[in-house]
Every structure is written in C-alpha cells, then in structure tokens.
Amino acid sequence: MTRPVLRFYNSLSRAVEPFRPIDPANVRVYSCGPTVYDYAHLGNLRAYVFTDTLARTLRWRDHPVTHVMNITDVGHLQSDADEGEDKMEARAREAGGDIWTIARTYTAAFQRDLADLRIVQPTRMPLATDHIAEMIAFAETIADRHCYLLDTGLYFDTSTVPDYGRLARARDDEGEHRIDPVAGKRHPQDFAIWRRSAAHENRQMEWDSPWGRGAPGWHLECSVMSRLYLGERFDIHTGGVDHREIHHPNEIAQNQAYCGCADTGATVWMHNNFLVERSGKMSKSSGEFLTLGALVRRGFHPLAFRLMCLQAHYRSEMEFGWDGLVAATVRLKRLVQATAASRARAGEAVDDTPAPPAVEALLARFDEAVCDDLATPRALVALDELLALRKLPPAAVLVGVGRMDKVLGLDLLALDRAALRTRPADAILDEAAVEAKLAERREARAARDFARSDAIRDELAAAEIEVMDGDELGWDWRPRA
Ligand code: AMP
Ligand code: ZN
Image (cartoon, rainbow, N blue to C red; front, side, top):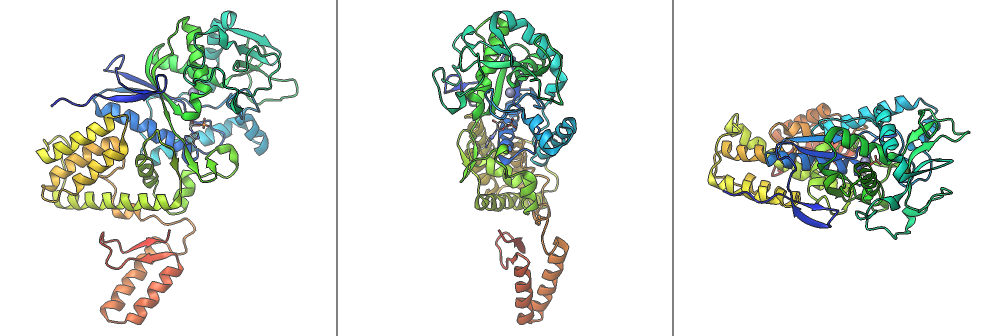
C-alpha cells in the first residue's frame, strides 16, 4: 500500500509542501529551546509538545532523526529586538543570586517538564554559554563584510544579505517589535551580534572578544549551534510563531552572511501558534504565569495537558482554560480505561504482529492525518474509533494503539487509572483517605444505612471530592474541578 506523502507547512513559502529530506536516513531538526531564567510556562511547553510530535512523526515515517534543541542561558534580551536587559542577568540581579545557579536550576526544571510530558529527549541540548568561542569565530568571519561597530557592540547590517525579512515578510514593518532605541544603527532591523558591556553594567556573564568585553547577541547562538551540530544545510527549524518575526529572520541573515549565499540554513521553517489566556498571550515576563508544576499541584496529570495540545492543530491559536483541561482529563481517562480493558483481556501485546484489516484501515487514516502537516486532532479521532472496535481481539486493538501512541506519546500502554487519579497538593484528603471513606460508604450502603452513606458523600464533597455512583467508566470518584 502506498503511504501518503509527508507534508509540512513551511513558513518561508507560507504553504503546505511535500517534505523532501536532504538525507532520508538522518533528518536533521533544530528547535529553539527555552531561555532558562525561570520555569517554562505552558505556552513554551506547547512549543515543545509540537516539536516532539514532529520528531515522533518523522520516526513514524521511518526517518532516523537528529534533533538539536539549544538552551539559551545568555543573550536573550527582554524584548526580542535589541531592547531591555539580558533576561538572565535581570533575574539574577532581582533574585540577588548566582546566574549560573539560576541557569542550572531552570534547565533541570525544564528537563523534568519534558520527561513529565513524555517529550522524547532531543539528541543534544547544547548550552549557549558552552559555545562562546565558536560564536566569536563565526562573528569574526562575517564581521568585515556584514557588520559595523558601535559603542554598544557589533551590529549586523541587514541590507548586506538578499531578501532580509522574507520569512517575516516584515521588511517595511515599523510595528512595535521594530522600535529600537540603539543610537547609530543603520537600519531599524539591524541587530547586535556582540554586545559590549557598558561601564556601569556589572554583568555576571561576560567574555573578552575582538569587539570588547561583553556577551553574544541572542540570534548568534542558534546560527552557530545549528551549523555545528547539523551542518550548513539541514531539514527543519522550529520555534514559536513569535520567532518568525525577528529571531529567525536574523538567524537566516547570519547564515547567509556566513555561507556567502542565499541559503537559509534549514529548508523548512515551522512555527507553532501561541497558547493564550483570555487576558492575552502567556508570557514569562508577565509576572504570574502557568507552569506544569502549578497544573500538577491542582491535581491534573501532565499528560492531560499534552492531550489538550494534541487536540488543537499546532498552527491554531489555543486558548488555555481549566474547563478545557478538565475535558482533556476526561478524554484521557476514557482512552486509558479503554486501553486498560483491552490489556486486561489480552495479556501482553506484541507490537510487530500483523494487524487485522480493520486496524490497518484506521492506522492508514491515522497516517494520513499526521502526514498532513501533523493534523493531530484528526489522528485522535482514528484512535477513538480504534478503541471503539469492540468485536476485534483485544491484542489486535492494542497493536494499533501501541503504534499510534508512538506519535501521540500519551503512554497509553503503561498508564493505569490509579496514575491518573492525581490529587491537588493542598488536598484535604489524600488518595488513601478517599479510598477508605469510599469503602466505608460501600459498607453502609450494603447495610442499607443510607443516612450514613449520604453523610460520607457530603463529607467527601466538603473535601472537594465528587463521588461518582454508576459512572459509566467505573470511576468511583474525582476531584472537583
Ligand atoms: P523562550 O523561553 O521565551 O525562549 O521561549 C521558548 C519557546 O516557547 C519559543 O519557541 C517561543 O516561541 C515559544 N513560546 C513562547 N510563548 C509562547 C506561547 N504563549 N505559546 C506557544 N509558544 C510560546
Ligand atoms: Zn533560536
């Protein structure tokens, strides 16, 4: 059977295109990683659920993948353009702490978030600060022909490369991101390659360079690390849609300057849309923001958030709301329940057993969906239908679930009901106490002591536990949303 063509939306052409890997036996993907001055918020994590879905889909299509995701521990200013302070330095100053400790702390927290969301560890996660020498060497190569020196540092002249801003289509954009206070810049879009420390600045992270003591501009690290680990030309570069406007056009400009050609580095540039709250885009600098830890403390399972992300197409804006998370939790429970029921009946499923035609047909629909620019909402429908095929031997269903879950990453073959019955950190009753109360209530009902049974129900309700008599999925209770 011929499989559908794998297609991705390329932000360069603003069109869905067939994916043609440079080397089908090693697809090379670079993802802009987090800036580690704080926890990742749920919007950042949406970006990494997207890159994970991409990497998993490439593997599903039998392509080995080299996936590089950088850790930005220096250089990212408070605005994506050359405005404000270095986010890392600003945080260290506010906290009165050691910047390297801050970077290590939040890098480790990010790694835990990835693991909790079953995001496959990228092949490499290089740190910007481990590549200062390479960044200086890169800048030296392009400095004469493409850069100019100001008191504040070395700047890239965007008029020296072909078609600057093609990705953003923002050549004439004078929008808010383009307002730039740096005196002496030749064009508003020009950007710092190396930033000189000001006399009063007192940075914790700074290095000597031919352009003075200071730190690299943010865009430089991604040009340097993608080139170092993936080569001058590689397949896919990802980031949030904000990166399409400044960071990625600037990376492309640097890549072109370095190769002395019109190549953009990556062939395909892919961008996830934002996770938004009713009050606006979720952002780390906006004070209060939602982390995966906060969600878990409220009693949600991280994979409910992963499922919530998969229910939306990565190019659509997604609104975060607790109701939506409750709905995703219910859907995840259904999936886990149905899979667990098949598991109980089938024993161990063997992944490479041939699947019967009904399962193959749904796998083909799943394939068609994920290959169509990662249409995960449609892929999930194929999974729902597979689990609804009641007449098939359970082992056959499990083979299909196992294959689909390689892309979805919901851990369906391992999760059980108990794992999903998480409780808020500040819950009045822990899980064992709830179970004990329910056992007591069952005894009361068996003894037809309905007054006692109702009293226990009320007691549980006061502790935010809803008793679910006769729930079709067989759940005895759930935390109140
Ligand atoms: P940062 O830690 O700010 O460097 O961002 C890490 C990644 O998250 C980048 O790819 C951003 O484009 C992406 N991102 C930031 N905010 C959001 C959001 N609200 N929704 C989705 N992605 C986001
Ligand atoms: Zn980047």
